[in-house]
Image (cartoon, rainbow, N blue to C red; front, side):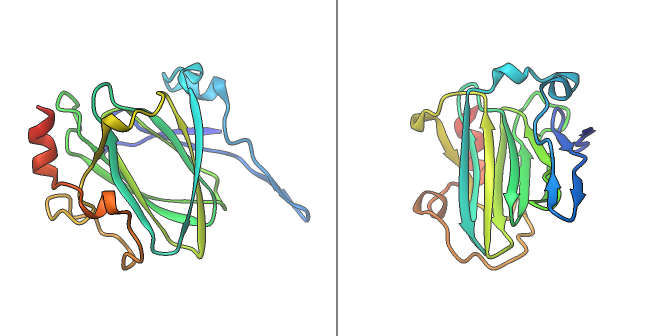
Length: 182
């Protein structure tokens, strides 16, 4: 498994596995505590695993947690997603940096997103399953959503949005979120 730093987001990493494929299909190690530890991340710090299934065009995001934030390790285990991370940590050398990725069940690449970064994705295939490994228990009072179509973020979503939650539909622009967190 290869660890690849994400230059636009300090402390973010891609974990690229080495799948073994044959006529039966493939086998891939998707998490290795020693490899995660080598990137400076405590593998024992993850407390919760979750999964979402989305239909093509569904957009989830942009989300983050207030307070201490929430670090997460995400992976598309089936299908493909267009994934976005925005660094909202004022003390970060990559503050307001943005990076996009295509995560897919074909590659099984995982993306580590540090606490204080906003995250969202759009399903590119008929169905897409995204697995999350999270370092804090969920507290709905800390949920923060940023408008996915905020011109300041200028995220190049690849498909028309087919469905979005009410929470995301009424999300605040980035400038309002930044003002509320200062």
